[in-house]
Image (cartoon, rainbow, N blue to C red; front, side, top):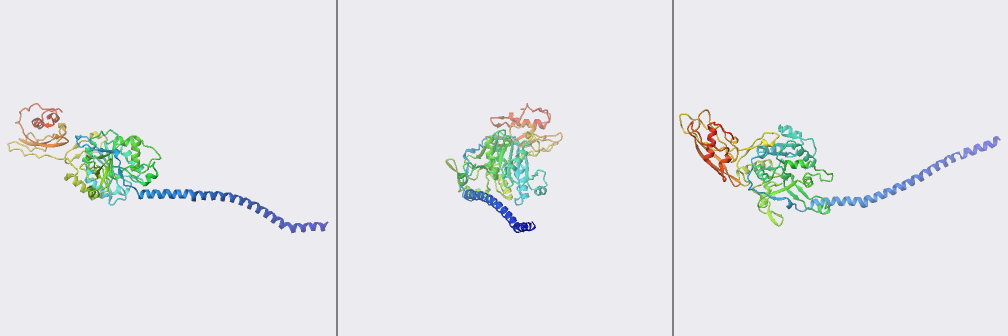
Length: 475
């Protein structure tokens, strides 16, 4: 019995390692098989994914990237959008009410941004009813020290729609008849812009700018892309209704770039887009500077429908882009003292910042000559009399032109008389009546002194004299 047990114990001891090894081999074999099976499945999926990536996705991505680069590199020349060309009518008589807000987008990477801002303040920025400078640099705002320099916390700039639209919608909270938006390199001729917008109603949803059709290989590969764009570097003018309508523009598939998004949104919400030209077909908005455009103006031509026209430069030009701050001052000097842009005299506007733009009326800074009074025992120096536009009420231009109780014995005055679309300056001489002499019955306003476009000097003179003698006069 003991011997049998000893044999059995010896057998167990002998085969025990083998049994453990068998179990280990069994486990290893079992898990190895499962691992091999799962590996074969995963490797099969991996081979499929590698095949799809290497044979399908990678060539597609390379093709799209290469096509995009080639489309941008070997693009055709940009052409005008003929559908939006509208000839400017310079025969329209100017109205007196004109409120313009100028929004200048100052890029933080601009060289000497404060030199640009100072140049704008000294030139067309002083003629705009309200001028605001927008930047995303707090440093520029601090150095400027101007309350109308606004810093926005954003990494974008005006070429991104979210940034551009944010500025427009916030500025629209205080209504303005017209809003000009451009960067610090744009020069604006406010006088020519005023002549342009007088041809339309500011209550219409309309925007003015330079419209291009960008024809390239890229747009032929992807025909659903939008080729039209509105050049931001030439500046854009919006009516108040257009800005309100832009806030209704929605769409995730619309482009993010401002120049393309503006066109798409305007088309979506029904804003009228106008690329104005003059009677010779020359554009009024330019995205390039004068140094580039003027030499090309004698050679380069572009096509408008079936005819070729020169690109530069119209007498009614409104904007020029990509200019240095020195060029801004030079262009302003030229527009005021040269006849190349057309100018009707210096103009000063009420620069307060009320909410209602109806309170803003233009005033003139030109003052006529006043002759000294004749020597007499009792006389006084005459004050200056403002140059006025025919049709304005007496209270807008007539001042109390005498001091104390004495009136000047004579005075020379000037008026502007409408002749077509221009105003002709006319002078007349007034002799004051003796004290106590009752003047003849007077017209109620200067407008009634005009018949067939001719100012009747005698009636206007009596109108002035009535005010000089401080008689009761109800307009």
